[in-house]
Length: 170
Image (cartoon, rainbow, N blue to C red; front, side):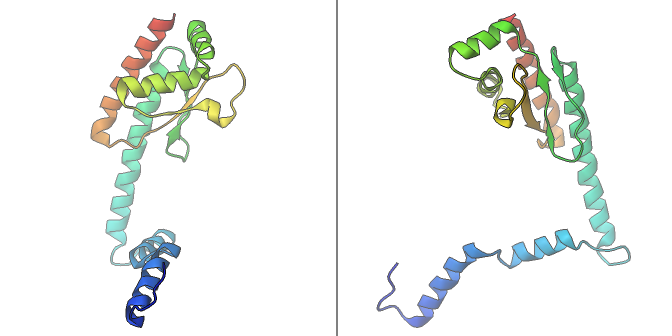
């Protein structure tokens, strides 16, 4: 952008505005500092920090366990528990007819599953074929970030879709 004929003070403001995208704003810098240097025991905000952190962690743990349990109850699905990340990565044993149909339409079988899940439920998961899985195995990556009061609805919709999908392609 050319700034000829513009007051030098206004030019300075333009440069300042442009430079905001180069580094975090003040609020962003404070938040990052708090993340890497949280309140310590004995400091005024420690008790509230600990309470909020524990509440969030316990809620994530509940949601992870609920989804993990539900996935392992689905036909042909096995899943390991979450161990640090906010993702689960279940393996799905797809019916041979579904695998053949996916190949016929030029899609990876797990991608076809994920697309149909999205279209039927609005739930977005990522096909394992994008992660370099072993040939002949199928996976998807999902998260357990929906709010605690919504995770059961997500599980119900996912379970119903999966049962319908498996029944359709048997």
